[in-house]
Image (cartoon, rainbow, N blue to C red; front, side, top):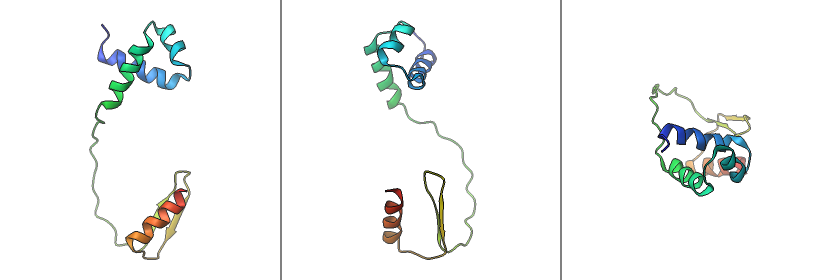
Length: 93
């Protein structure tokens, strides 16, 4: 019987391995269906909460939109929420 920690390490190891399930399971002596079960169980676990500090917001007009590629769009314009949501969707496309 494997410990929860060992199962977690095996699941994370497979995710990072870049090899097929079959290869990984053969290498670690586990069944493919067992690995699949562990992976499903691992996904269902609740994320851990982190303590955060809340700061008083600065009085700022406009917005800064940071895209996934690191680019930033800054504007002093004021948008209605619906218009801003359309702008974000267009930037993400």
